[in-house]
Amino acid sequence: MKRTLPPGTANVMEASAIVADARFRQSLAQYCEKMAEPAPAGWPLRKLLNQLERYYSAYMLIGQYYGWRNHGAAVPNLSRLQAISGQSPRHTASFCRMLQTRNLISIETLQADRRQKVLRPAERLIREVGRSCAAFVQAHDLVAGSALALPFEQDAGILGEMIFLSSARVQGAGTVIAEFPTVLRLAGYDSGYPLLAALMLSHYRRAAGKEGISLTHGALAERFQVSESHVGNVLGHMRQVRALLACGPQEFRVTEEVVDEFEHWCAAEMAHYADLAQRAMAYPESCPPRT
Image (cartoon, rainbow, N blue to C red; front, side):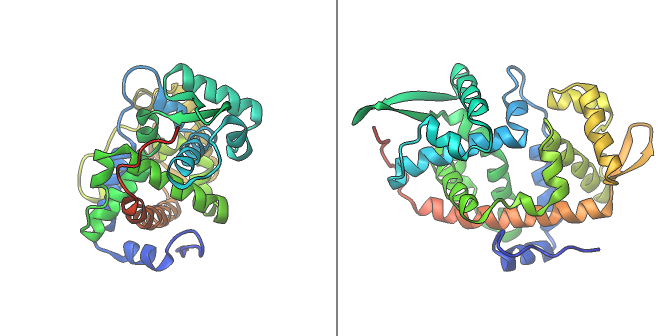
């Protein structure tokens, strides 16, 4: 059964127009290429953030910082992050310590009140957290013939501003992903979302008559810096909920229902971030950091 876009999650008319556009699936193939690309060598930052609770915490950290930096919101300290992070206070504090150890955030003393400790995200964290957001805007650009994503490549601060706008909307109206149960469940696994993107990429490549990517447990484990057993567990869950069709040993295809859900999820996100990208670019690009 074909789904309709849920009200309140995005600009529904815009998202519906995106789904109907002839370039839509080409744009999704581009998006999936980006999200399923092999993780960079070295410390597994991408693996860390490719799990919904940790990603959400980092997302809110960035949003909290840019709300303070650009809009006079409350000081972005640990206690305020703990109130909105989606993790327990203990896990939030541990997560921030890990980010600080890896120079992904700095903890700075506020000059106006030296008791206040500001959590400041590094550009590398902003770009990694914003990778999917920017990719959705790029996908929208392909459909709309716009160039909204270009400023993000030049200025991570504009990306940070867009994340703030999104985080404010999420706190007021809820997350977009909550309306898409299969996507939501998979995002809860380590690297579950990029695994879904890889499966969808294979789907779009086959539809275009192109060679697919390897979906063996070993190839996916290497691509996303996880174990083969973990890949097996995620794919096993997808089989249990009838999201995968087995076509042979370690050869799978997503069901039509999952394709439909994924496409409507992406259309909602494309509309969400395209709207916010325009608002983010309207903010002065050279805003000096608050101290």
